[in-house]
Amino acid sequence: MNFGVVVFPGTWSDCDFHYVIGEVLRQPVRYVWHRETNLEGFDCLVLPGGFSYGDYLRAGAIAGRSPVVAALPDFVNAGGLVLGSCNGFQILCEAGLLPGALMRNECLQYRCQSTNLLVENNETTFTRAMRVGQVLKMPISHGEGKYYADRDTLRRLKDNGQIVFRYCTEDGRLGKEANPNGSLEHIAGVVNEAGTVLGLMPHPERAAESALGGTDGVMIFHSLLGSLVEDGSLSKR
Amino acid sequence: MKARVLVRLKTGILDAQGVTVQRALDGLGFHEVRDVRVGKVLDLDLDAASAGDARRRLEEMCARLLVNQVIEDFTIEMSGDGPLPADGAKGRLTSSVKGDTGSP
Image 1 (cartoon, rainbow over the protein chains, first blue to last red):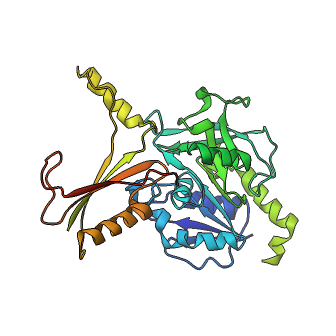
Image 2: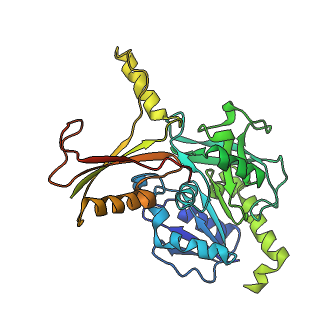
C-alpha cells in the first residue's frame, strides 16, 4: 500500500507519520509537497498535524486552498483514501472534503493530553479492525479542535454513520468531563459520506509504539491495510 | 479602491473568546456589558473598474477563502474615493452589505 505524507509550510507531524508508516508498518511512503498535483500511484494520503501557514486567517484555511488539496476530490473519486489528523482535519473541513468546522477550544486553552476515544462505527475502511464501543487511547495537541456542525449537518452525520470517534472516559462513558475542547456531541473524528476520507483531532502517529505509551493509533493503519488486502484493491494498484 | 471586510461568528454560535473578554470587562467594573463578540477586520486595496465589480469580486473572495460560512458571517464596506476612515469613524463609508447567512 503506497502512502503519501503531505507537507505544507508549518506542518509538524509529517516526520512522525513518515516514520510510523515506513519503519513501524513497513509500508512504502514518501513526502508530498503542497504544490504537487499528480497523486497517481498513491493508495492513501495523510494530512498531518501542525500549523500550516501559521494558522493565519483560520486554522487550515490557506492550506485548504493549496494545489495538492485542490487535487484531492479527483483522487478520492478515483478510489483514493485520505486521512487528516489535527491540522489535517481542519484542512479537510476548510476544503469542504469533510462537513463542519473546527473552532477555538471552549476552555480557550491549548490542550496537549491523552484522550480516550469511543469507536462508534467500525464499518469504515479506517476502523474495521476495531469493535464498536471499544475505547482507544490517543493524544491530542491543539487549540482549535472544537467540532461544530449545524443541526442539519449533524443529523446527516448521524443518519449516515459518519461520526466515527467520540471523546469518552476510560470506561467508555460520554460526558463533559471527558470532552477536552467542547466539541459538539463529543465528536473527535468523522468520515465523508463514502467513508473514504477520515478526519480526527487526535494523533494516531503519536500512539504507534509501546515505548511511546501506546499503540492504539496503529489500529487505524491496520484497518486500512486489512481493507485493501481483503477487497483486492491492493493487488490491482 | 479600498474595501473593508468584517468577519464575525454567526449569531447563535458560542464565541468563547467574546465570553472571556466580557468577563474580564466585568472584572474591571464594566458591569453594563452584557455580551461581547470578537471578530476580524480585513482591509483590502484592490484594482476594479467600478464599485460593483469590486463588490462582486470581494463576495467571491469571501466565499472562497476569507470567510468560513459554516461558522462565520461577513459584511463588506467600500469607499471608492480614498482611504477608509479609522475604526469607528463615520462618514466616508459608501455602502455596506450583509453576507449570506444561509447554511453551507
